[in-house]
Amino acid sequence: MTNEELNELIAKYKSGKCSDDERAFLEDSIFSYNEHIPPLNEQEVEAMCAKIFEKLPSKPNGKLKLWSVIIATAATLALSAGVYLIAKHELLSPRREIITKTDIAPGSNRAILKLANGKMIQLAGNKSGIKQTKSTLIYGDGTPVGVQNGDSEINALITPKGGQYTLTLSDGSVITLNAGSELKYPAQFPDVGERKVYLSGEAFFEITKDKNHPFIVESRDQRIKVLGTKFNVNSYASHAAATTLAEGSVQLTKLASPTEKRADADNLILKPGEQAIVGKDKITVSQVDVDLNLAWIYGKTEFENAELKTVMQMLERWYDVEVVYKSYPQASRFSGSISRNKNLSEVLRLLETTGEVHFKIDERRVIVMK
Picture 1 (cartoon, rainbow, N blue to C red):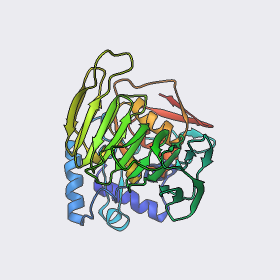
Picture 2: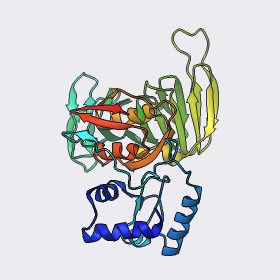
Picture 3: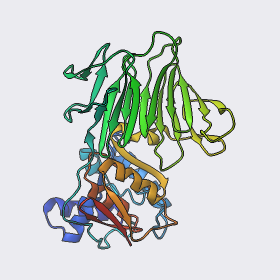
Picture 4: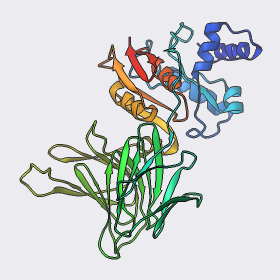
């Protein structure tokens, strides 16, 4: 489909003359990229589209980026609404609708606070986080949580599947927990020595600088030491622990397991833009796309050249669903980006544009089919 043909289709859509298939194609394919693509004038949009069309293969496959399979953008639409159209190379071929009786809403601000005495407190869903003061906890807007702590008590902030929450520690450091995570932390850090917390799951850390009190994160197989920096730790049990550095520097140590007869090893310093993967025998460091790894912090579900299993694990945690595989495209890789505020069906439609998979939503189960 040429740009002229696409413009004609958009004109039909605006005038209400589209067929059902054409309307479904356009509505399912409109995808906002305002946050990532700066405003473009008409000539820039046309030039961008021309370059992408030149690189398109004759047939689509699962390795194509979902947003570059075809960015057949009508300049007027892009400039007025800031949207881009994404679709398979065979633009007007009918597409099966996702089978679902009830759509599933995205995750939200949900968390449980577990106090040192074992008491569990369901935190308010209309708040985005809590802040630890000298002796009490308050919400980010100053509303009291209604609990008091002793200085040395260890609390735990727990986010279930479908939840995220932010914690401001007593030193001013800010930690945002992703879904299905737990952070253990002291109500107050000691006057001397380390500031230490323990993480299970995923969190983004913005650490207040204090050269006299190093900040320590222990998480599965690694120990991370910082003075003041921003970094992401992904230590879900489904894959090797990964630390991605956005700013500053961190020292990372591979921890020996309880059964290993050796000392902790592989001390190394990460630089901004690097990611450390803690493997069974060693730590591997590589340059990565930091924005991709931190997308969840900015309200996006993003994946690049990922296996379907990796993508579905992200959706399982954020939408609190179970994934059942009746078919699995072994050789396919998926890339894409979509707001974490979208319902699950919209994310699945994005994956379906590759033509590699089809989905059925059955209550809180997602069934993967051919």
